[in-house]
Image 1 (cartoon, protein in one colour):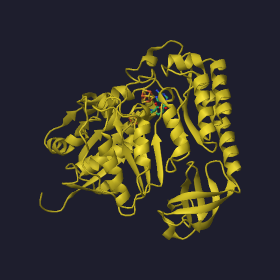
Image 2 (image 1 turned 45 degrees about the vertical axis):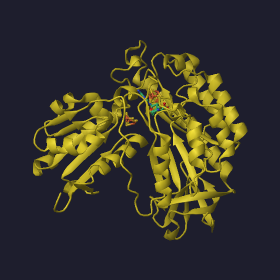
Image 3 (image 1 turned 120 degrees about the horizontal axis):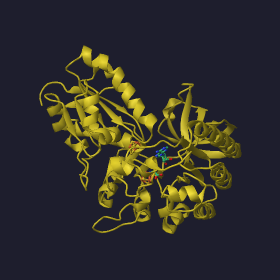
Length: 443
Ligand code: SAH
Ligand code: SF4
Ligand code: F3S
């Protein structure tokens, strides 16, 4: 192409995998488009969507409504919707939103250049799901970027009865370990320090490869790469958490002592109805083993309240499990019936008011647990990776502990991107306040 590049704006909803996918969209379109952070000047406006709960879907519809005016003022603007809602709705979305030019599914990312060209001429839909996934082109790392998300697998085969992901993301597909290692190496060579490996269930990574590899093997291989300070991963399904991976937490210095292990419910009856394939006892046993190997491990989880048939007793089992596991953090949600999923047609759907009340109780308990965990950190000196200036008070810096808590502290902006030692001074509900002690030598 000759002449200046056109402008691309991407609005991303949903999980970290979507954040990684949006980067891939920009990369796929890089020949013709350059990213802008000003939506009003975009030639191409893409929305990367999430369908996990009804609320996530509503956010997309309301943004589309608001974009009607922009499209009217600039009819040459190409407006496209991709990701999980696009995959779920396809043609229906194009029909419902007359000012929309393009609907592309979760496997359409690498077909984007051609799809966008087509969408400039006629309204276009592509929601084909293929059994495999093309290996993405080499990433382009930003100047000063110290953290990266690396997608290691696509899709999900688990079919938890509440979850839309297997329908909108297709079957599990793992990238080759060599390709993943190459991506991580190039990031480290460009100055990267922290890598988060992404998949819907990383614990089943590698099963479908010609030469099968376990997730723990991949983690071992990456954790020893020179320059990698911090390695994290999400999300881990308790049913597949191996002894080998648990052991890795005690052996690999780069592997951060934080694990996100979604439990969803503390009731065996509900766990079975969710098709989670573990019991509360098994979950708690995993937690005990993890803490044996790594006593300072911080643990976070996801919880659903008001799943069909959940009684007060089931719910109280969840509260009790939260106390026993002593979660440092949790993300909790009211159950939301999703299209195609089995639980959507289960009897005994729980009334909205009951869900709201239970959510409130879960969140109140978590606030107590989180604050208690934060208080235990006060007085300790911890390693912090400085991520940038604090959002609330720009004269402060903001970073994360290896255990994932956010720390704010005063220090020169030259520390951004660096590893520093910080003494934890105060515990707050959502963050910690600290005092910069010294800069760690660059390893
Ligand atoms: N792959 C991850 C979860 C991805 S979805 C895993 O297996 O743990 C992120 C979280 O959204 C889930 O852990 C669950 O707590 C929540 N969630 C998924 N479907 C939901 C639904 N229908 N209603 C409410 N919450 C839901
Ligand atoms: Fe959804 Fe379950 Fe797959 Fe997670 S493991 S993405 S909750 S079906
Ligand atoms: Fe949402 Fe799709 Fe992620 S449904 S949570 S964006 S995989």
